Amino acid sequence: MPDSNRRAALFDQLAVVGKAFASAKRLELIDLLSQGERTVDSLAREAGLGLSTASAHLQVLKISNLVRTRREGTKIYYSLAGQDVATLYASMQAVAREHSADVDKALDAYLGVSGLGDVEEVTREELLERLAAGDVLLLDVRPPEEYAAGHIPGAVSVPFGEVAERMNTLEVDTDIVAYCRGAYCVLAHDAVRLLRAEGRQARRLQDGLLEWRLRGLPVEAGA
Image (cartoon, rainbow, N blue to C red; front, side, top):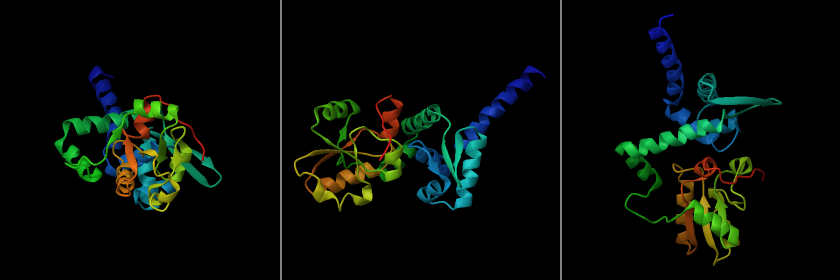
């Protein structure tokens, strides 16, 4: 086979991976899987997809070797094929925001941060120091199954939908930090706004669990 054909075949295979990323819904599925393994039913529900549609997207990701599966009884669980897939996804997010004004504008509109400056950040370094000192309450506002799959040690699971009803169980003078999935997740922003509206001292973690994990910081599993 001529070298030109071999080169074309190589780039054809690279394009298979690129095409797997070329779908908004598949990116959303990768975003969910970056938090831990999930069943097809769970992924479909969270992404707002029909079961057959979710399965079709997941098959594309599997054919591209970006996800893997395991069976437990009648259920099939999907997970990312490796941390390098999460790294690729996070890098794509960063590049898109850095070089695309449209992505940057859409993200700010989604997070509700454009021109508001109402949600203060805590760096990962500061949070580690505060956790070691024991003078901060860390809230994981993601769904319970994502918390169980992996969370920051010391974090308390308070899904966003429960923040308001559990407000009275949080000490009034406690400094609160909330976090969610990653830089493109709105849950922590909204949780902080809700807490601050009730007079609580609250900030959000810089980015989220995806970026925390990719920097090799501690993560533990279990409810």
